[in-house]
Length: 249
Image 1: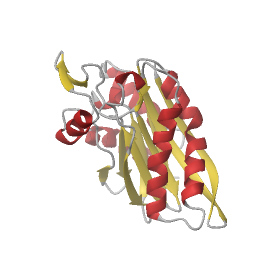
Image 2 (image 1 turned 90 degrees about the horizontal axis):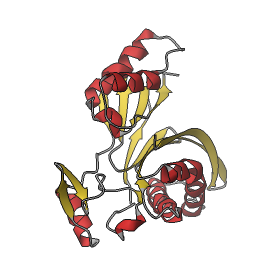
Image 3 (image 1 turned 180 degrees about the horizontal axis):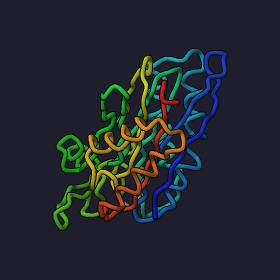
Image 4 (image 1 turned 30 degrees about the horizontal axis):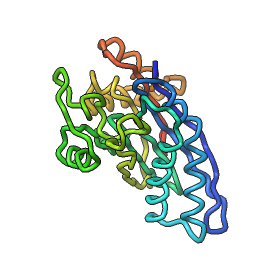
């Protein structure tokens, strides 16, 4: 098992005020568990550093976006692991807005009680022409190894933390999305590709909504997703983090 996760709260100082932030994330390690563990243990430190530096005068969307972007790059560089890396799919709740930052092929899904399902992340696959072009500009190549497209015939995710042995072919600049949580009632679901190997986004949302409709506070939705993924014979490590938002509390 090479995955790690985070679900906690922290506070930053921005524009003369204390700003509380909730963070949720999954980190799907490859080659080693070291990078995923490092990310889970240190991501709050790097986010705090860069969010405070960029937003010292006032908190703005542009400054938050830039801070998250550089924080993950800094986190990636801070790993001393030479061989191996990790995906990172994180959600930050800042002043009733959800920010998603994604590196790799883990997935972020919003499941609204009203039936709406929104996939807020894009699986970063090297065969995607945009990622392929970026990889080639960084000195790497995309090969097909046993039917799976990989960077330098080694790495399946097109973006990731660390993987220093690929000599810069892997980018650690996350794709970032923002979603307002006003009037939202439902869950944020973060899963690694051990789940999406066997379930579509809609199927993951169906499992989540089934549990929400039970209205039973003792139901562990993340546990349901993991167990059903294992029952569906996924061949990969399985992790899920589910955060109730708005009226789902």
